[in-house]
Image 1 (cartoon, rainbow over the protein chains, first blue to last red):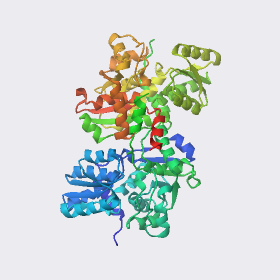
Image 2: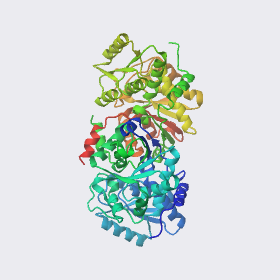
Image 3: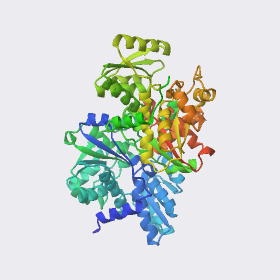
Image 4: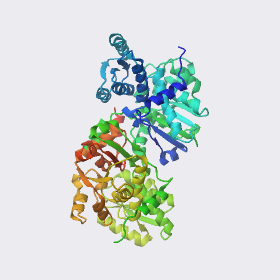
Length: 319
Length: 319
């Protein structure tokens, strides 16, 4: 595969997203800065449409399907935020979206996809989901929109970096969680072009540490049974994301499950924002005051806020 | 009492707060706009330092104590966000803060005051709290900082309006919750000066509807046993806030307890921000698509995010 992500495609994605995606706010916290011994700038993609940065890539990819004019239907495999992004983007472009959602999937996320007008196809496992995607591609002549191993999706995610560098005067370190690497690929290519000295770190749960392993080995090394609350990060890297991450990343941070819940809690109770476990993975190294981050101006992408809070309401209404 | 709140004092407060208080973001939501049939701009004071707008008024009031040079100690009566605001402001000005906290008070809020360096004085009820404040004024020669019936505090809260009008191109309606009326007084005076056509509505729980009653009667009419989850709104208006609200308010919205919890839930699950019940009171009329709000450009002050989420973590960690 020769194609790779270009900076110019990220600029095109930014043009397409203007006035459609939110320019999400950057939030700061004196308490966090004191704990971290650093200056932290939180790019709040949990406040993005659909509650996650995934809307960016999905919308840009679907804009290309729409302008191509060959397909009126798209299909994707996602039990998470990408499915919601594709469903909303399809509605905005007047396309039909099929979202194949393998187990485990939360009722809340299925409802969200349906709420955006997407057609949900639940499957028992990932293998049957992949077959279902292939079937829908054939039967419906649907364009398949991979959640991360797709250059248009990666370009859309890269617009996060354009905004952040526009919003914050100087950042010398950036942290983001890594699952399939679509977001980080976009961040790396945009960061390399606009601020070559910026050090970009990927953050990964100890229980799904396949990205770090894959980067070290130089080949995709899936983890057979990823065990983490960070449901968005259980996937492996893709053929298009691995080489970009290998070339550009300054390093990795591994975080424990306890640190993930602690970082979520800090965000809720101190920052007053709702983040999902996958987003908390990038906040956790800051909270433990990593020596590599001391004194730095740190950007961190809080990737999403889609977490099931049903338990909270029962606890609140009974007090 | 002849003194009233002036616009020039709000401008002075803004000067004092520059670089100290956060310029909080304004957040929008397509989902909310569709539900409301309006354009809604949420001014996120839950993301303010100490998690509530109260820091503004407290900091400006303490800046005046500090520059006056007569007192090195302040005292206030507050079981809520004002106490936290005073405690943090006192630390920043190197003053001593006594915070008298009558029951009911949450452990979380006491800890927060202590965390900011304040001295907590728990009392059984409001009467003994008032006696304790008087004692501390006498014994410690402490300056008393009333939570809302204080012109400097009101001026500080008014800076919310300066920012909002700077951040959003045109707003024709503004909603905010009413407790003692300090915030709304500041909003009214600033709004009247800068955008006389702006209609400002106060939002109040049905279970603590004393502000509407007081405005109608033209005298402070306390409700003997306010019953609402919105703990910040159980107080009555003050002698300085009532006349301003009578003169400037366009009207009131009353909301039920169920609507308050529903609005909190909407904020958490859809907007991805943590708001406390008192803040939800101003969001609730928007969610029920009030006819008076249809098609408007609505600013709403989300006043704070200090809510005890202990129940949430137990529910999350056991799944």
